[in-house]
Length: 369
Image (cartoon, rainbow, N blue to C red; front, side, top):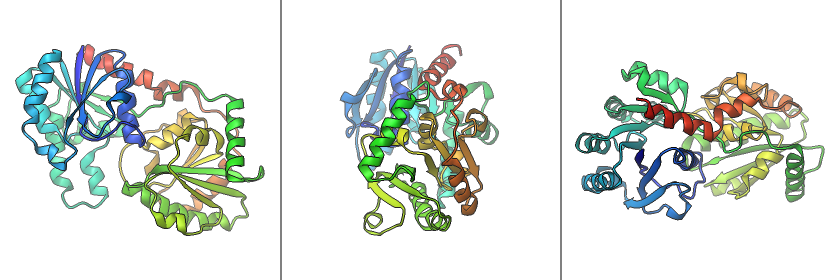
């Protein structure tokens, strides 16, 4: 089938978890259906892997209300003889619904969160307006994709959707088995040399995109709440903090046992070489992509309850410990225990989170209906 997708923001090159979700989903989905992706001018179309990327949408915030995009998209849908239209997030719901009506395409809404509830958790006064619009968009779709079972269940109940039109299409990873031991040991040696970390010191990792409020708050939780507690336990550790848009104050301020690194190109080395991944996120919705990646690299992890949404503990074989939100004493104790954890993630984890399996399930879901 020919599928047209609308992505309303930059995602190539893919650096953040949300950007990787879109980039990897279409990379693997396009193995089953031909995909033409319409997105913003800021994207690097040369990085589109397996699908065509058209840089049509403006980078201006006004792009979300530009009615002339209807005519651009209508022409593309007709030229491609597309049978399905995917919109990422509900924000272009008005455009997707119009194109469905006038182009006779089947509309798919690919939800990354329950957006109304996410903005509610961030205390935005207008969250209910968005929630109503979000519900309206999902109700007019032929298919609805959600990143977690809990989001899907919520939408079925609160939006009044039909269960057989909804599918969980989770965030995934590109590896289908744990990294080999020599690769892990090589990465650990590399990190110890690069950051002058003695062999007796456990290496802890936190990474994210820190322009996003929940990740920034998680960083503050780590530095001002967790780290002082770790200092009191006589535990030998080094916390490495990586990611985009870390505020300058965290580079200039000194935190014992912590090294603030910033953005890195070789995240795989850090995922392979660290001992424990930390996820002290308590705000925001949806699955935490960085936690899925860490577990996929067979890395032990400790997370808050909110931060573990969408991950079945039965798939993790003890690699993930979940603590109550804001219980930093429990989180601290769990970090120390996980530093000595010796186990492998279950093969079932990869069956569930490998992008090839996720995309195949999504492709087959729209084929048979």
